[in-house]
Amino acid sequence: MKRADNFNAGPAALPLPVLERIQDELPNYGGTGMSVMEFSHRSAEYEAIHNDAQTRLRRLLGIPDGYQVLFLQGGASLQFAMLPMNFLKPGEKALYVLTGSWSQKAADEAGRYGELLIDDWAKQGGYRDIPASIAGDDPSLRYVHITSNNTIYGTQWRALPKTTAPLVADMSSDILSRPVQVEDFALIYAGAQKNIGPSGVTVVIVRDDFLETANSDVPTVLKYSTHAQANSLYNTPPTFAIYVMACVLQWVEETGGLAGIVERNQKKAAAVYDVIDTHPNLYLGHAEKRARSEMNVTFRLPSDELTKSFLAEATERGFVGVKGYRTVGGVRVSLYNAVPVEAALRFAEFMQDFARRNG
Ligand code: PMP
Image 1: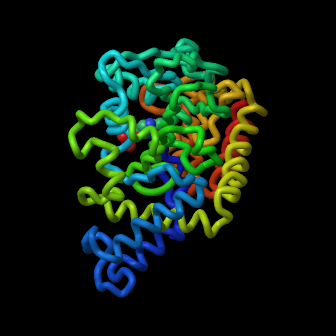
Image 2 (image 1 turned 45 degrees about the vertical axis):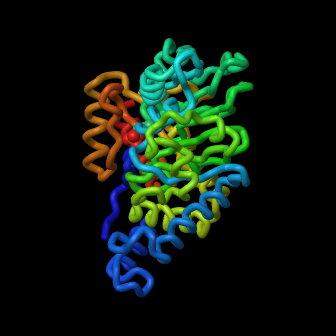
Image 3 (image 1 turned 180 degrees about the horizontal axis):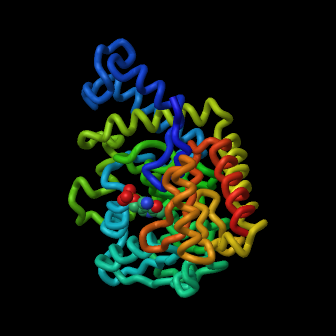
């Protein structure tokens, strides 16, 4: 069986051993005679999977006591609305740092609920860089929102911004790709479908004392506290997606944990960026070097014709998902956790070869 060299931006590659395990367990999970899709979310079997996913995520990310780990639906996009619904009121302020299209979407939604301060420094520069500092010390700020990795533009926060307000991060495209100090955040959210599982489940990590300050005038199903109190079993959770996520997390633990992930991710990103840096007149990187994303490498070629022929050759050679986002163009290579090092090396070799012939 030939697996694709899959550089999709999300949903994205999953580890082959995980897919094989799921295939094996599908018709008869743990001797139940049923697949995970077919049994109750109130069953002991499901509860074990649910709690296993939570425990593994806590262990891998070092999530301390005093934080809730929630499994929600609606994608990161629902979080754009749910966050301000729970934590902003008319007259209250939040700071949104615009570093890409997704942070803009998050801000657009929050603007419906409260007053926004907008940091558009990165936007002004065409989303090539990450601000070195932000105005995060206003004591009236309810929270500060950042997008830790900008999937479309290929930039990533390397160091956290300093702020005295509660820090909230959309980590959809870099969760579990590198260590984080969870203590630095009041709330983290991430759709699973890039680094930790399939689409359908969104992870929210929220600090208890922040949660206690949430608005009460929110529909029950949209309150974080509803899900925290019910261990994310208030209503039927996306059981199969959570099961796949648990399998992915187990795979991470069995392949060197977060340290192993970091080592492999650094190798993959370095391989591709090295070729960009070796051929700066052919591969025009979008991100400033200091703001480069380890997850999404974005570049264009000097002409639309060259970009087109690069993409056509890439497709011909079996590289999947490397076309830039529709509003941005160019090339985007997503190197999430489950992309094998060898796949990134093959792509880097292709870039070298293309440069030899077109440089
Ligand atoms: N935030 C970021 C950083 C993303 O990359 C994406 C999806 N690509 C989203 C939010 C939106 O996620 P969803 O489709 O799960 O709502």
